[in-house]
Amino acid sequence: MRRPPPTLLLFLLLALVLGREVVTGFKICSYNLQGFGPKKAANYRVLHTMTRVVSRCDICLLQNVIDPDGKAMKNLLSVLNRRGFRYERNRFVAVTSKGLGNASDDMQQYVYIYRSQVVTASSMYQYSSKKVFLRDPFVVRFKSNKTDIKDFILVPLHSDPDNVVTEVDKLYDVFVDVSQKWNNTNVMFLGDFHTACGYITRMDKRNIRLFTNSSFIWMIKDRDDTTVDSKAACAYDRIVVYGGTFLKAIEPFSAKAFNFGEHFKLSMAKVLEVSDHLPVEVTLKGAAPLLQATPLLVLGVWVVLQSFLSASVLL
Ligand SMILES: *[C@@H]1O[C@H](CO)[C@@H](O)[C@H](O)[C@H]1NC(C)=O
Ligand SMILES: *[C@@H]1O[C@H](CO)[C@@H](O)[C@H](O)[C@H]1NC(C)=O
Ligand SMILES: *[C@@H]1O[C@H](CO)[C@@H](O)[C@H](O)[C@H]1NC(C)=O
Ligand SMILES: *[C@@H]1O[C@H](CO)[C@@H](O)[C@H](O)[C@H]1NC(C)=O
Image: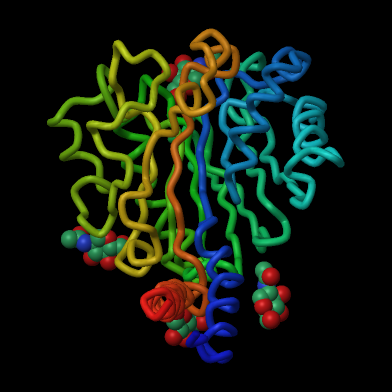
């Protein structure tokens, strides 16, 4: 019986080991939690569902968090990081903005939960628009060695539904500001923009620079549905990136609303306990050497298969 040369077997093994990293991908997610605070965090079922959603993401932007003393977020993180839980090898950490808004009972925070082994939050910046935004973006710059794009900036927005056109247009100024500040145009905007259904018209788009300037690429499209209720298909939650460099670093067709109720087979009531929005997500490509492992894997499997096939023909 003919054996595959040992070097090829080694090749295959190497490709398998490296290939695993590629398959996982690097997910960036955004989720409007519709008022996540101590009350929701006291419900274990809600925390458990959130854990399943958030643990799939390497970075997860949470919006509409009202948790002034941080207890709800501490609960969520401790469930996420609990020893013995199936995600125990991951250590999740969070960075949180201050409460933003103009009503004392609705001061919302932007929270980024991220997997600290694969990505670091290298700088943060609270943008100030002097009352153009109801909730000014809390901008965070991330660095990772696991991704094709090593250094990128996330700009969050939970817009005021009564002021969508002005606020989403203003994101352009945030882009100019932060890209100069950090000399980096790898910028992704994400959050509940309300750019759908009754909040915006076709005409309005002409007054939004993120729509009129084609260097901004809308990953979550108008036809996507980011709501739990399937009766109204509205793409409120969005992910937008600037420039070809960022676009090339994203897995094609990976941007979507994640219908976790369907995926985890949960009732709509359980999903709605968390939020009436669905999380949206996009997958970044892995770092270059890992990506090269995939063709190697295919080649390796083919070679081994060939030698087994010819062996069985001889038998
Ligand atoms: C909050 O800001 C919005 C504009 O973003 C404004 O319409 C509203 O009147 C403000 N509310 C208060 C209480 O200041
Ligand atoms: C990336 O790799 C460099 C060099 O190996 C290291 O200094 C740096 O800390 C790593 N960065 C992250 C975010 O792991
Ligand atoms: C800004 O970044 C570019 C490359 O991305 C680099 O060529 C340039 O020197 C940088 N400028 C400054 C002021 O650091
Ligand atoms: C789009 O925005 C970029 C970044 O600010 C700018 O360099 C470019 O000139 C704009 N394009 C148009 C057509 O306005």
